[in-house]
Length: 237
Ligand SMILES: Nc1nc2c(ncn2[C@@H]2O[C@H](COP(=O)(O)OP(=O)(O)O)[C@@H](O)[C@H]2O)c(=O)[nH]1
Ligand SMILES: *[C@@H]1O[C@H](CO)[C@@H](O)[C@H](O)[C@H]1NC(C)=O
Ligand SMILES: [Mg+2]
Image 1 (cartoon, rainbow, N blue to C red):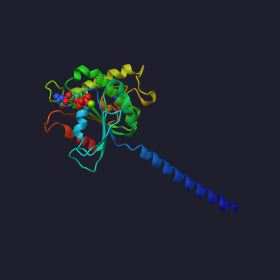
Image 2: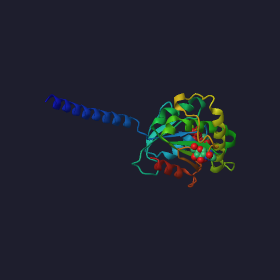
Image 3: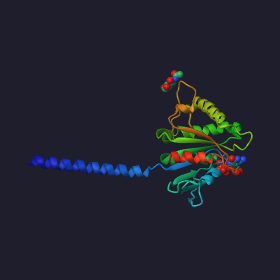
């Protein structure tokens, strides 16, 4: 008799405990909902121009001190039901690490490059991209990264293939000098070595899907590349 009571108590406890665990998992799962696209890149690359092109007129915009622009909106000219949370970060050196606060809820990273000044800024651009790819959340969640090679309207703009190769070479160099000391990033947040130790760095060696697109955001050109960016966002939605 006492035995049956004990068994009933155990069974009830197990059921209650399982229910509690499921509820907790559900709650924390929701909090970490990944729906954010972050737009990053060094100063003047065209981040704000891109943000404005993606947004449609019906945007309900919210401003915060950390971002230049932030909003939840359907992409201009696309399905109104699909609401994207997009944050345009300022590229100023001091604010550059702010994107890290959002990597736990990031769905995709849009990294904007000025293709017309790339040669001059190669090092700075590569260092910034390196930091992003080395971020713990970006790595663990294998976040997709879109590299937008902007300002293709300039004659001197480098094509995306050239930018890709240069970034790979720079990241390869950075990787070997990196181990010594990491900058302002949280040490827990970074894994310093990208790619295979036995081969020179290639984007194909990391688990994150990396895509390159060419675009021009200033001109009204219909083939401006903005549609490719939107398609990528919809694919990663
Ligand atoms: N020629 C040209 N200029 C661009 C293009 N995209 C942006 N710009 C200009 O580059 C400057 C910086 O753009 P902005 O979007 O403010 O860059 P951010 O600092 O990354 O937000 C602005 O003067 C833009 O008008 C482009 O595709 N072609
Ligand atoms: C280097 O290592 C990776 C994974 O560890 C492996 O897939 C690749 O074949 C290796 N390459 C060479 C040249 O040994
Ligand atoms: Mg801006």
